[in-house]
Image (cartoon, rainbow over all chains, first blue to last red; front, side, top):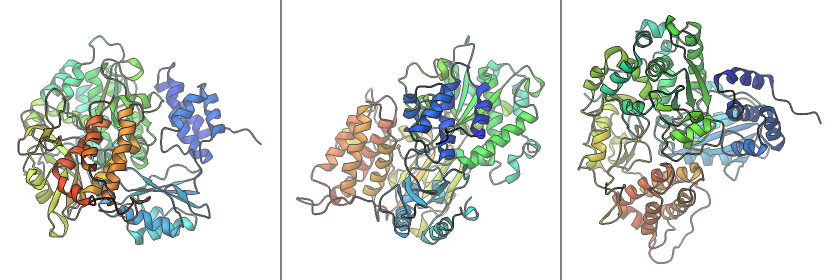
Length: 179
Length: 454
């Protein structure tokens, strides 16, 4: 097994942010951004990644673990290649978000919230408010090992969701449907 | 006119060019910043105080007063912009960040001058990936022009602005939790006092202000505090940016006058309730604020009126027993974060409350037992009522749990779960009671929320 190594992008981020914070605090400050980027680089943050980040930033692994498990966008569990995150909070719920969520789970043969389709391709999660309540139901998509997809998928109904799922099953993010 | 004639924070919405620094400057941008860097800091602070600008993030605290808490002899002061917008129903700051990022940067330059800040941060919620790219690009443009960095605009002032991204935690919108997160830890709120203005980021005096609050600062510097104050009411200057969602014809983000009532907002600004149906309830400022009944909508959606107007009923714990906000004060509602949620007559209020409580339970940081455990109890009782499996006495139980959380936690998240609970029960009590089967429950609450739409 080759040793894990943080990507060049993460090292660049560390170098960029370092001078913007007090020297005696910056290692801890960087814990959250580095963990988030490591979560993208490795697909998830497991014990090995926690130790890697702790070593790089000279922090106790317990601190890094505590941060990693606090934030929902730092993936600590297994997820599929695509992570479809659907808001069901009040604004989206009033527009039918639960119907959309259940439709996705049914189409992808997923039984539980935060479950993954049997082929391992798509994980579907119910998430909390994405701050786009006037355009609900809203979803966001993450691709394992890839940078942020800076799009929201708004005003979803079952037909629009079918288009999104079709694209994901083909292995691509339907960026043309996002805003 | 409910829609503001003078648009301060939404003037460039829907203009895709405004994100570019040259277009922003052509439309009058960075005039305030050029003026500010050559002003005496105390003078800017005095204008902000005179403007009656109040915090747009939730508490409505006077911004000038907050700034005044920073010790005058402090060697290092930080400015942190709270761009962690995540109170359900609220999506106004995201519009400023996306459509007019330079307006925020310009406001930050003005505020930094007033507070003698050299390092300012924007704490932006992690989900806002699109907005992060837009604001980072705007910052890069401002650095390239010498509007940020060393000796900005050729003055004696240095200023760095750095974006720090959150990673999915509602609690980080609470200002002390935000600071814990910005220091690289879990988003745990801290006890106040000490307030951040005295002991904040890295133990230094820190001002934490909402995006919209800071976005107003350029106008105040350019036109003066009196001009800003004149736009508003006696104690609340300027305009307000409201985001409206739910069952209206035209949901969206609107800059309105402080005098705009809830009914004007729904009928005139948002085109009324969809399908000609009737309104049943309106949450005026994000889901933590007490809901309003249709006959309570003729009150201006403004900080003082929503808190004090006697046309709004006082929230009760049990019929006849008013909720005590502390010191004998009662609770009507509050302006909160400007997130307006409109629910029509088809809405099942028991399910609406259940979903709101599900959120607070999910987002409790876990430090304080009343909130960590209490929000879990609230959601389980609310769920069984909403899905027809409630037990006799559940309405009273729900109210007692909420009353036990309120006021007993480090931060306001506990209150944010308790207040809507008590308000929904005060105002829709019969609907909750009617959902509870007589005698032994005939059905169990479902494990999933299938068909949970209201």
